[in-house]
Image (cartoon, rainbow, N blue to C red):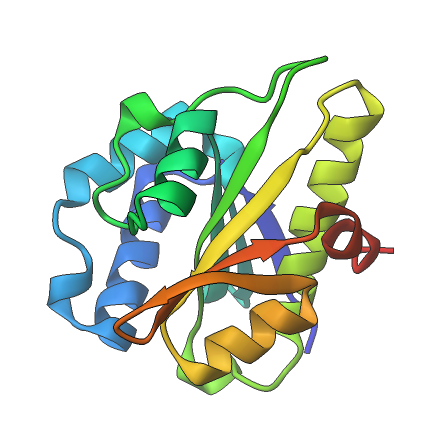
Length: 185
């Protein structure tokens, strides 16, 4: 299967709505607490969504954000879980010659397209994006994510992640930026 990959700048609002619908199908309505907030986050950091399509059908996507250092510090020190509660004010552009923190927020593959290599390609696309940003001087200091399931934990471990803490079966994982970015090459 040949997939077409698009980044957020190439996606109109109706495609973004499809991403939210895929999340709801997979995880249930309780996952998306406020669609408007999710869209405002997307508007502020459009680079943070990469989606795969097969014959104009959404096959899957990955969502990541550049966040302020305080978000990372709260996640680590206060054992905060940032998901739907990630505010637009928590995001920041990637800056040259400054600390940059990446939160891997969500990856979802539609059932008919699972086990077709899309997840790997989406992760490689994020890695390639981060490599390009580093080449222009945007140092990536930290990549972090939450593992909600055992499978998610294993995936993040394979991406260079190690657990920082766990709370009620949810793990905060620090993902080694170099290991993660090397997966794209």
